Length: 72
Image (cartoon, rainbow, N blue to C red; front, side, top):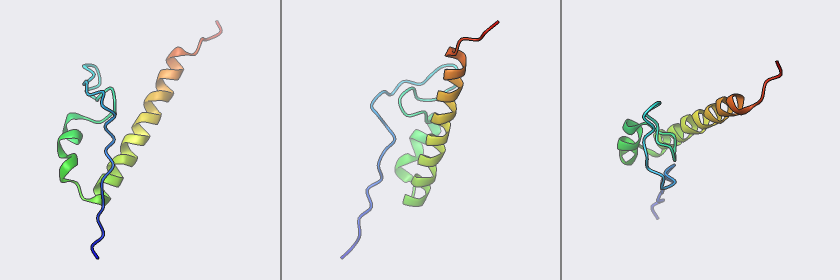
């Protein structure tokens, strides 16, 4: 029997590119990353998912820092 691997997509259906950082507002991938997704091997896709996850965590942390009030 042949094992079938289905790549989960990081796409969440909010396909809009941010003009400031050139990342999709939904999945935080670049246009190039989105374009090559279908051609990636399972191991390459897993690596990209980790890169996107790390990028997303970084972006959330940066956003929270901007939103946090400072004592002056």
